[in-house]
Length: 403
Image (tube, rainbow, N blue to C red; front, side, top):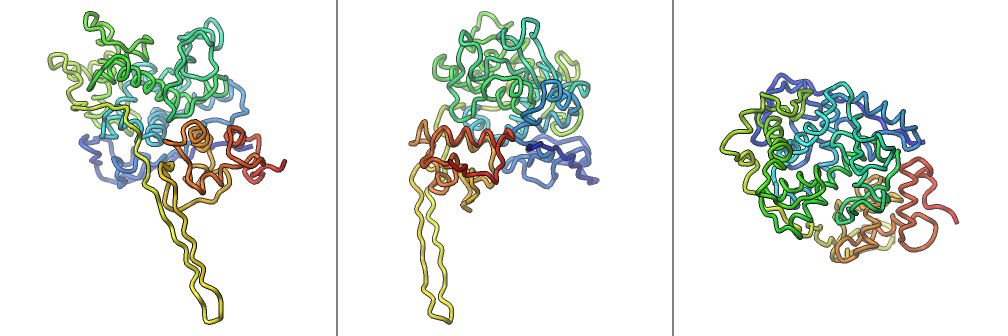
């Protein structure tokens, strides 16, 4: 059984950290990631070693919640950053925001408005609207972002489907997925992007109003702009962006400090003739295709020794539209996206490859790695097998399966 572990990583240094344009007032020894990292280019690097889940897939709901309950505010923050970093290119284009730390701050603002980041008392173990039973109410929500059951696949069919974010894996609704803090964050981010797509393509929103509308949608289910009713904005999207500005401007992205709704310390970020969004910048959210890697040609040469060995030259040309991956071609069985490990992300890459090969075609080596179910050819069953590996039902050493 694969049990995901989180290792506390603390870097001690007697310096202050300058991150992006926000001067971080926390001492560097409060920062879990290496302060020498270029956060804008690399992200924070997952210093708590979070996996695709925060908890064992076969744990009981009580055990899952107990693990989430123990998370500190700082751990809750980095759990969000892990998901943001994994989907950075997608978020950057959809939100129109090139500054990674501003996106970190945005999701801290959402988590604050919804859960006060657990306040260091309940970690990510925060739940609302459960009174009617599991999955019954569309308002039933859990985790840092208070992600509702409506975000998940296979939820109540009367709920509005959220199947318009093909770039991110959509988990099916179960207590094991719903109550896991990392999965909940993943689905909360996906839910925001669900409303971004509607805001751009159906409501014609532009600029910061796209994100503002997506936040309104996250709260009410509708992202349409309602100029006549500013109450929809003041108490939720605009409060979120003010709290986000506090984290960003006051230098509390990486420590255990948190704010709360209507916190007077953030009052100055609610001023300025209602231009609370000015610091967010002149953003241009877009539904443009996410940039793919250019086709790669690799050549392997075996040189001739002093004996009469033959020189072998092998050239591999990747097809156009290949899924983004490192130049080094991982031959790890199950590693469909060639990132050097086997995870839920590989199942997602396989499903995207099957659904839209023009946009999400796997690389040649990725297709070879993805064929894990013992039956020739890459199908949805290969994705299912990888999900079962992630859940601990198969061992990686058992791949490919023997039929």
